[in-house]
Length: 249
Image 1 (cartoon, rainbow, N blue to C red):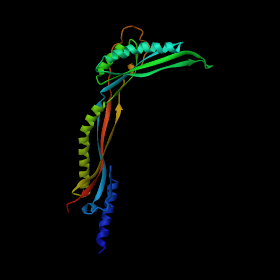
Image 2 (tube, helix red, strand yellow):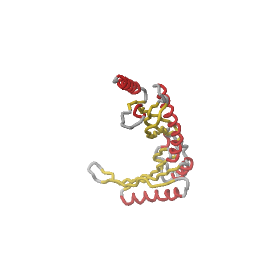
Image 3 (cartoon, rainbow, N blue to C red):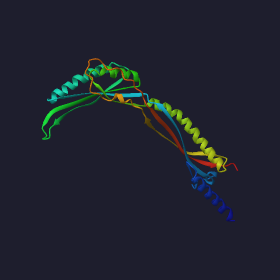
Image 4 (cartoon, rainbow, N blue to C red):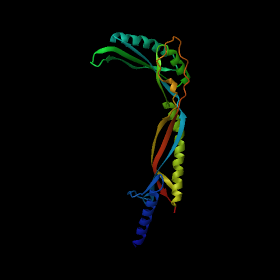
């Protein structure tokens, strides 16, 4: 009378061991106290993901001006005189967002700690999904400020659209993996028990080296608009979950 339960337990144990070493999946016997047939079937934990690389669609350009003088107040005043006109001109562009960056004045000292001069730096930050418009504006503003740095990114809107597309791919891959695992171990199918969604993004950018800050902008003419080339961002959607392997027999 005791042989049949012992044999069933041994087979379940062997199945757990076999599936636990399968790539990307672990299997555990469902030893919960739920009534019904679910308690007789093992549960499989697995994951699937969908990945794509999309062009970054947003540029952020930092313009800066640095001034040195003997008077702290005078240095701050000259910084404001250079920054404010550029800020007002940038605000006229509807396709380019503008905001203040850093603004600070600090002393230069000799080895004895005596202040010998004052230095100041002010920054103006441009951000836009219209990369050519941002480039042209930065070129015009370079009469009073220089391009200090730039970076590219993927906008939240574009990321959301891509993640929505990838979710369908990840869900299909998860379903296919669960179906294949069920068939491989002699089950007729599966039922989803739990699901978790995750994802992330990394950036693979190619930054033009010629766009770093340069000191020589002495002429009154604006510099030519730099040709900006964004990089690519990797978007990932991951589906993790647990399924109950079932059989109709």
